[in-house]
Image (cartoon, rainbow, N blue to C red; front, side):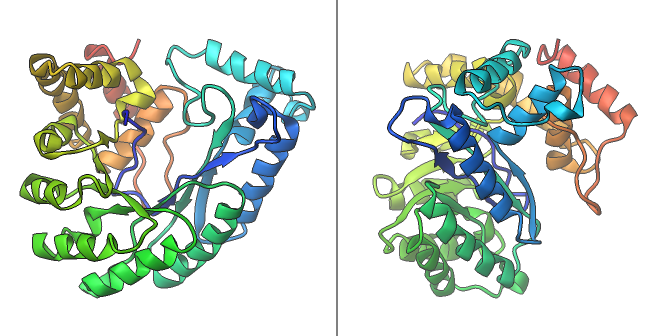
Length: 340
């Protein structure tokens, strides 16, 4: 398994499916029919008032198509020809200094389009709707549900969480997220994972608890679940001797070569190079992000704006960086060689 994109456990619950527009032809996700199907899926999901936002390739194509036509609103449309869609995507890719800029939206062979759906909260009714939406999503080709269920006032038990995962797993594959176990402690988390693994369609787990829990998680679940280290590369390094399949990388979206350099060092057992990337790049970067008002998530939204991926703004009452804070972040990243 290779490094993959970031999902912060501090964000609202999210579903990150891969929706295939396959009609017996290669590069099918770039065909207008597939684009329309994906967009129809987006519109269906947005009928849920608790869905905060959607990120998908048709939206990108519409925006770029308008941009390359001098911002003319009339061009904010999906091209009628697959080659024209490909041309719009190529224009976006060629104008960006970031390798792999399209990876968040579409696979390199254009066979599948990646979508992300962001929920505003983790309340029970929201989860019920998410399960209902998952039924629809599975029907149109979504691959996996990253589950972070609600646990108000520590109301959940290992049994009830396992039942929740099993309910979603009957609809589509599930990735557990250990963040929900943090307040309960290690024994609770391990018991929950043990029970959840009884559901056949629970396939993966992302760890946020780290430390000794991560070691015990690897011992319990390695080989049964795909184990993904969350956040920092040092979390992955901490789990690596015990059995871990991959990690979620922030840099894969902004400086992919850093993520790949670390991964290649791990694959080559070059621990000196891996330590260099952790101590000289990864740790200083995240240490700085954690000092920013609004913390990690506000900072990452700001980083996305600096790289031209999206805007920094988050829904109130979440804090968004002001212009002076953006300038300070940009100066720091230029000093780190992360921004030109």
